[in-house]
Length: 340
Image (cartoon, rainbow, N blue to C red; front, side, top):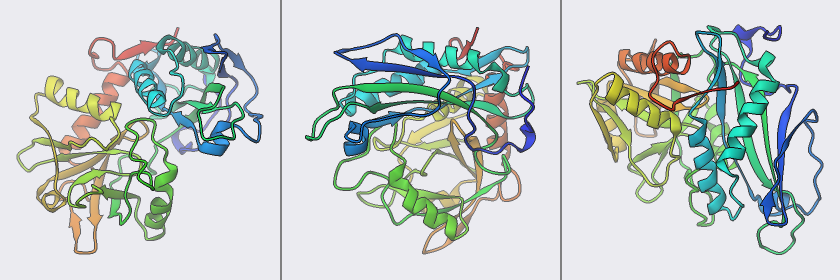
């Protein structure tokens, strides 16, 4: 039975749950891990995460499906993406089976924090790894800790599918000092300054352009783009420097294979977005949220479908993917994992 929580007004913020999972990498191997009641972390002042920010994270959700089962959506892809990130950051990759074990155990131990079916809320799961061993020289940490906790949340953007406003950012999405853009498990600290600036000017998010020419659309601080042309074709930016979103990948599959829509994955110039009928932001937290306008120094661009409500294709994509996640619509094989 779910906790007595006002699911309709819960918002998107942290609140502790009963259990979380902890595993430790030491002496060349990961241990089996275990659940713990303690939400606090005690760490050495010289830990690798504090000295050199050696850390990465993922995000996924657990929901109650139409038939009352608690399920997660494609957690194996989160595990694989975290493995890719670990390799880039010289962190010993967390085995996929250990990652999935942690997901299942945390969800099962916190089942009363999973919202009831139909509320639109979810149990957000945050797996993360950090260098927990002391290190003063510039080198990888000798020890690592993997943790996974859950927190009940509502919509990431207030108002659910209410259209949002973007501002074209003067900053690059990639990390400074030429360190490049890690393809998974992004360090969102790099986008916080620009994000706060956008919020202070009345915008919900930033639109980042490519750092080389500043002419092509990349992503926002926390989501990928999907555009819809006036003839109903779905266009999504193709770039080696944006997050390989699991949600975007799933929406493309849904559009192509379930809804029989035309898909184009290609570079998208900023100049052409004024010709699109719809614009949406997609990601684990938001699923897909419509964009009503984009502000730049040159002009304000308004999308004819989406100023007051989501455009018809954005709405159809949202309804279909959430229907699959809630098992209202038959899911492609392997997309739904039941937490028993």
